[in-house]
Image (tube, rainbow, N blue to C red; front, side, top):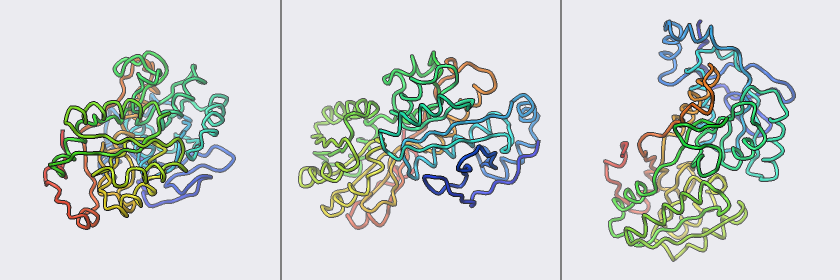
Length: 353
């Protein structure tokens, strides 16, 4: 079956933001979506010519997928778009055989439960979710359909999976966790005499509890002081960041959805104080950010889409392993690095392990 040409430049409007695909405000709409991983035209051609892909297309049924994002931002769009690519790749479905129902909590904790209830009461065949609190909320309300966690930090610690290889319930997907030891190793390569790191995080975020615990362990091992500043909402991020000014040599923020949403406030503080700011998951184009460190989030989304495809084709979600990210990647703001007089080793700007 031929997959229609990919149109990456189309932008439509949802209730929450501008996206390259969207839904009608009050009704489900089948939408032409991006095709699978690899280069666009080659992917479409390969899908049409592959006997395996043709067989999968005939075997797979059209599907309605709930898309539940905890907040907005470039990285969340990358994850969701990657998910669609992976799902098309894994199922062989044509884009017009997929209906998406999109909801976004816009970082408002009060909306998470209501959106989760809406999907639980709806008729989507599966719900794909990004954001640990949203995944937990959805998994608590749905036990008769698959819940696909996109780029989750710690599904086992969050209680939605028994293990990454054999989740055991109705939740599978992909994780975005990269050991903070790798991040610190890279920071030390840029700052050889590094003695202190500051971080801002939400102490209520279960994913971040694990990440910060591991960060503490690695900084202790390397005799680096870790200065923590907590924020329980986006309105508190600015004050938390200001509390680090004059106390740390660099700031490193982790994959915290709330902090990512308010990273601009951290960037402003860092820039005023000439403190290098490194972040996991946030947009490197935000003023004050030197580099974004972490996995390729489009690829992490694609891995979740492939897991969802396995489930759609008949595998129990509890038997589908979570996809894991590949190497740590750097996305550098050259101008900000130059402004701060930083020399970034060339080996860091390619994949590192």
